[in-house]
Amino acid sequence: MKWTQRLPLYLQLTRLNRPIGVYLLLWQTLWALWFAADGIPGLHTLLVFILGVIFMRSAGCVINDYADRHLDGHVKRTVDRPLVTGQVSEREALILAAVLVLVSFLLVLTTNLSTILWSFGAVGLAALYPFMKRHTHLPQLFLGLAFSWAIPMAYAAESMPVTPVTWVLFLSAVCWIMAYDTLYAMVDRDDDLKIGIRSTAILFGDFDRVAIGLLQGLFLLGMLLAGQMTGSGFAYYLGLLGAVVLFGYQHWLIRERERLPCFRAFLHNHWVGLVIFAGTVADRSLITLLLQSS
Image 1 (cartoon, rainbow, N blue to C red):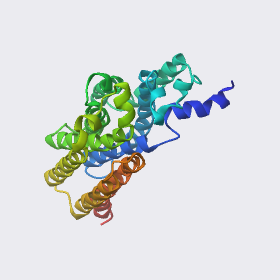
Image 2 (image 1 turned 30 degrees about the vertical axis):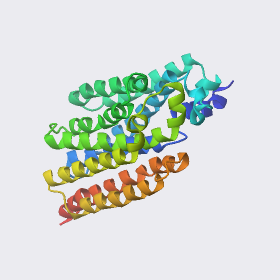
Image 3 (image 1 turned 90 degrees about the vertical axis):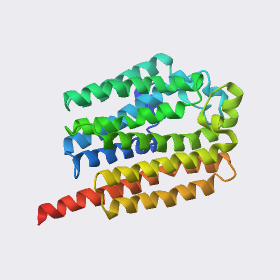
């Protein structure tokens, strides 16, 4: 089969045909860059992190599918994945993952030593996450740690010290990610119970919606604290208010715990990330531009 014919299979394997994961990983990365720069981050740093998010998320998807290649055939949502159907070989998947990680590392090499050192933690967490669902009910926590690792990396790339604000942002993002990935796990809960895959959706059981609400509340409190610690203005808090409204809509969607509405609620977190980013940019970048032009 020609490479042009295999390209759609690789796109499916890396989920580049479904960029929601890129968006969700990107938002907290952008928040951190704007916080670290206290205005507009450098163009080079911005490009490195955007491309790094795309490549590392793609690598993570390939690693995840390789780890789950014997399980995905038993789950409705994943039964048609290329490794399950045999359209892509295990060797191809490993090579593709290695290439994506290498490209990501080459991007990091264009930054500074501190960012390079932090990047090893990102790779380790990305490799560890897919196997957590076999040994713990907290794979969503490990996903949160892996996704949020971009936050201290962003501070390092902006040549800023890792401060208490950095860790407040980090822990807040972990709570948000755990909340929306629990929504995602609720979609597969019935299948996961049959084949022995663990998740927070299973761990929380009948308290799943309450747990999601608590995690979202902790996220908002953390972001509020980060805003206060950095002297953020009205626009930033307006973004957080928008997130409160969006979270309320998500809870309305999942009131019956049905598969499709839970999946829609998961996807809806893209807008949560966007409104907070918009508020952050309006608060920092617009003020910076106005001060420079005056």
